[in-house]
Length: 131
Image (cartoon, rainbow, N blue to C red; front, top):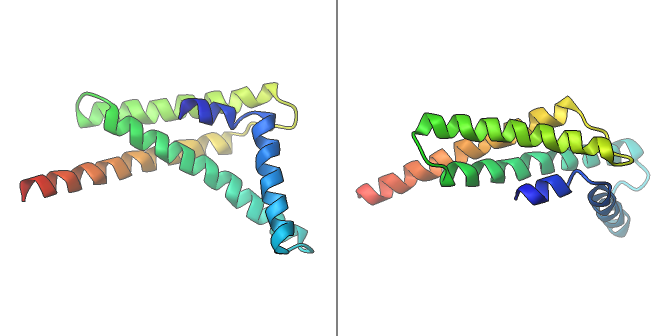
Protein backbone atom coordinates (compact mmCIF):
# COMPACT_ATOMS: atom_id res chain seq x y z
CA UNK A 1 0.00 0.00 0.00
CA UNK A 2 2.82 2.39 0.87
CA UNK A 3 4.57 1.65 -2.44
CA UNK A 4 1.34 2.40 -4.32
CA UNK A 5 0.91 5.68 -2.47
CA UNK A 6 4.50 6.73 -3.16
CA UNK A 7 4.24 5.64 -6.82
CA UNK A 8 1.11 7.79 -7.16
CA UNK A 9 3.36 10.81 -6.53
CA UNK A 10 5.34 10.15 -9.72
CA UNK A 11 4.95 11.77 -13.12
CA UNK A 12 4.29 8.36 -14.66
CA UNK A 13 1.31 7.74 -12.39
CA UNK A 14 -0.03 11.21 -13.12
CA UNK A 15 0.27 10.73 -16.89
CA UNK A 16 -1.39 7.32 -16.67
CA UNK A 17 -4.33 8.60 -14.62
CA UNK A 18 -4.77 11.71 -16.77
CA UNK A 19 -4.68 9.59 -19.94
CA UNK A 20 -7.23 7.18 -18.51
CA UNK A 21 -9.52 10.01 -17.44
CA UNK A 22 -9.43 11.93 -20.71
CA UNK A 23 -9.67 8.85 -22.92
CA UNK A 24 -12.83 7.81 -21.05
CA UNK A 25 -14.27 11.31 -21.23
CA UNK A 26 -13.79 11.41 -24.98
CA UNK A 27 -14.85 7.79 -25.50
CA UNK A 28 -18.15 8.36 -23.74
CA UNK A 29 -18.51 11.89 -25.12
CA UNK A 30 -19.15 13.27 -21.65
CA UNK A 31 -18.77 17.01 -21.20
CA UNK A 32 -16.47 17.23 -24.20
CA UNK A 33 -17.14 20.94 -24.74
CA UNK A 34 -17.27 21.92 -21.08
CA UNK A 35 -13.69 22.50 -19.99
CA UNK A 36 -14.72 23.91 -16.59
CA UNK A 37 -16.85 20.86 -15.84
CA UNK A 38 -14.06 18.51 -16.94
CA UNK A 39 -11.58 20.30 -14.71
CA UNK A 40 -13.96 20.06 -11.74
CA UNK A 41 -14.60 16.34 -12.29
CA UNK A 42 -10.87 15.70 -12.71
CA UNK A 43 -10.13 17.59 -9.48
CA UNK A 44 -12.77 15.65 -7.51
CA UNK A 45 -11.52 12.30 -8.82
CA UNK A 46 -7.88 13.19 -8.13
CA UNK A 47 -8.59 14.28 -4.55
CA UNK A 48 -10.92 11.32 -4.09
CA UNK A 49 -8.04 9.03 -4.97
CA UNK A 50 -5.96 10.62 -2.21
CA UNK A 51 -8.80 10.03 0.23
CA UNK A 52 -9.40 6.40 -0.81
CA UNK A 53 -5.71 5.40 -0.81
CA UNK A 54 -5.18 6.81 2.66
CA UNK A 55 -8.49 5.43 3.95
CA UNK A 56 -7.35 1.94 2.97
CA UNK A 57 -3.90 2.60 4.45
CA UNK A 58 -5.37 3.84 7.74
CA UNK A 59 -7.89 1.01 7.92
CA UNK A 60 -5.32 -1.73 7.34
CA UNK A 61 -2.77 -0.17 9.66
CA UNK A 62 -5.35 0.27 12.41
CA UNK A 63 -6.38 -3.39 12.17
CA UNK A 64 -2.79 -4.64 12.17
CA UNK A 65 -1.27 -2.33 14.82
CA UNK A 66 -0.69 -3.57 18.37
CA UNK A 67 -1.31 -1.76 21.63
CA UNK A 68 -4.14 0.09 23.25
CA UNK A 69 -6.84 1.71 21.16
CA UNK A 70 -5.55 5.23 21.79
CA UNK A 71 -1.93 4.33 20.99
CA UNK A 72 -3.02 2.67 17.75
CA UNK A 73 -5.05 5.75 16.77
CA UNK A 74 -2.08 8.05 17.42
CA UNK A 75 0.23 5.69 15.51
CA UNK A 76 -2.08 5.49 12.48
CA UNK A 77 -2.75 9.23 12.35
CA UNK A 78 0.94 10.08 12.76
CA UNK A 79 1.83 7.52 10.08
CA UNK A 80 -0.79 8.98 7.74
CA UNK A 81 0.54 12.49 8.27
CA UNK A 82 4.16 11.42 7.77
CA UNK A 83 3.38 9.33 4.67
CA UNK A 84 1.19 12.09 3.20
CA UNK A 85 3.94 14.66 3.77
CA UNK A 86 6.55 12.32 2.28
CA UNK A 87 4.38 11.66 -0.79
CA UNK A 88 3.92 15.40 -1.35
CA UNK A 89 7.64 16.06 -0.82
CA UNK A 90 8.45 13.32 -3.33
CA UNK A 91 6.48 15.24 -5.94
CA UNK A 92 9.11 18.00 -5.87
CA UNK A 93 11.42 15.61 -7.75
CA UNK A 94 8.98 15.01 -10.64
CA UNK A 95 8.28 17.33 -13.54
CA UNK A 96 4.67 18.43 -13.72
CA UNK A 97 3.84 17.51 -10.12
CA UNK A 98 2.80 20.15 -7.61
CA UNK A 99 2.96 19.30 -3.90
CA UNK A 100 0.35 21.03 -1.74
CA UNK A 101 -0.51 21.23 1.92
CA UNK A 102 -4.15 20.68 0.88
CA UNK A 103 -3.30 17.20 -0.41
CA UNK A 104 -1.47 16.36 2.81
CA UNK A 105 -4.60 17.36 4.75
CA UNK A 106 -6.76 15.22 2.45
CA UNK A 107 -4.37 12.31 3.04
CA UNK A 108 -4.66 12.84 6.80
CA UNK A 109 -8.46 12.92 6.50
CA UNK A 110 -8.34 9.63 4.59
CA UNK A 111 -6.19 8.00 7.29
CA UNK A 112 -8.65 9.35 9.89
CA UNK A 113 -11.56 7.78 8.03
CA UNK A 114 -9.57 4.54 7.94
CA UNK A 115 -9.38 4.65 11.74
CA UNK A 116 -13.16 5.18 11.89
CA UNK A 117 -13.96 2.32 9.50
CA UNK A 118 -11.57 -0.06 11.26
CA UNK A 119 -13.09 0.88 14.63
CA UNK A 120 -16.59 0.28 13.34
CA UNK A 121 -15.55 -3.05 11.86
CA UNK A 122 -13.97 -4.13 15.15
CA UNK A 123 -17.06 -3.11 17.13
CA UNK A 124 -19.34 -5.06 14.81
CA UNK A 125 -17.07 -8.05 15.06
CA UNK A 126 -17.17 -7.89 18.88
CA UNK A 127 -20.98 -7.64 18.85
CA UNK A 128 -21.24 -10.64 16.53
CA UNK A 129 -18.93 -12.64 18.77
CA UNK A 130 -20.97 -11.76 21.88
CA UNK A 131 -24.15 -13.10 20.31
